[in-house]
Length: 84
Image (tube, rainbow, N blue to C red; front, side, top):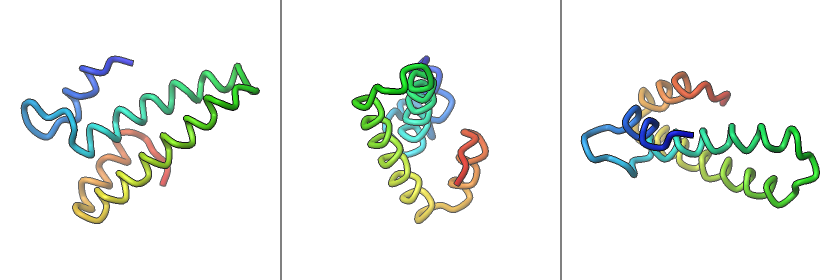
């Protein structure tokens, strides 16, 4: 996971590292990495709990973006390939 690359790709303006879009993109990268880990380590329940917490946080951020800017929400879903 290349954090700087993800931030530069999803930032809304120069120096932006904490907007909802950037946070969603970073969480998506972490979720996909952890999903691959759990495919090989099926009994790692501590990591599974962390994955559930990350997906819940991502869902809340997505709901926030959806409430404030529906077009940006739809664009994020397409760019990150998230089913919703």
